[in-house]
Image 1: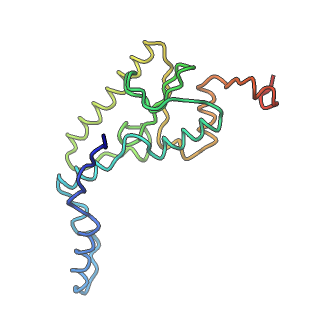
Image 2 (image 1 turned 30 degrees about the vertical axis):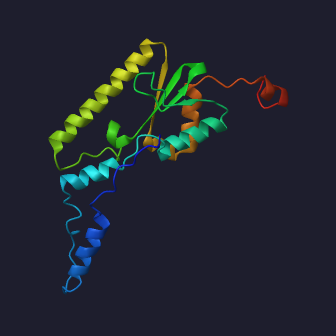
Image 3 (image 1 turned 90 degrees about the vertical axis):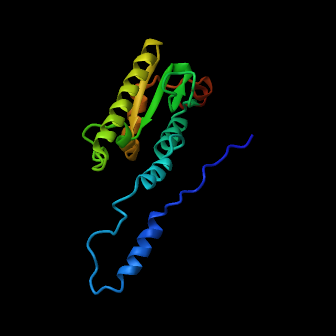
Length: 185
């Protein structure tokens, strides 16, 4: 059965910006404020939020490539575990969550901004997300799993990220690699 796609967004902010800019070209001055692109309707905001993916994001793909390069094998999005971790290493009983700094509220990160419109709604939404993250991590630890959280902003520095992963996980032991001289004995 083929997955049905949601209909395309009826609102295109770039088309509206182009129309507004074309209309303003007849004026003798250039406005300093972007016309109406800053002031989205609720339907437009909803449409924009629908485009945010929860799986196969760029930070997640980067971490997955790094894990493969380090010799780790993993499963993706195990729905039988609390929180459906992004990456699961069953042999090590380790669950890795790759959190977006904005959605999961990474403290002291410049990507962790607060929207100005509907601030009460956003605060409640972020509070629920953080509460759910804590609950899922607590349940996983109670089941004997190790929980590793990797933030979106950490992915930019590959060396630092690799050190964080290696420090969190047990080393990969492969007899074949030891025979070929890749691992120190």
